[in-house]
Length: 50
Image 1 (cartoon, rainbow, N blue to C red):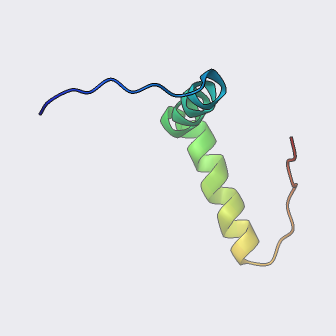
Image 2 (image 1 turned 90 degrees about the vertical axis):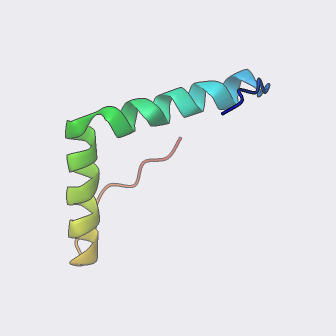
Image 3 (image 1 turned 180 degrees about the vertical axis):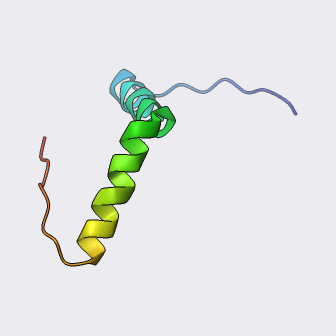
């Protein structure tokens, strides 16, 4: 497989790093799954806005 270097904006890179960190965090993934299950049952959860 040939490697290729690409350039992306710093903010986009930082957002990707944050997302990867969340996906690798077992406790965070469990919380997301639990939240999705609760939402499927009709339980209203917190809405996070930035």
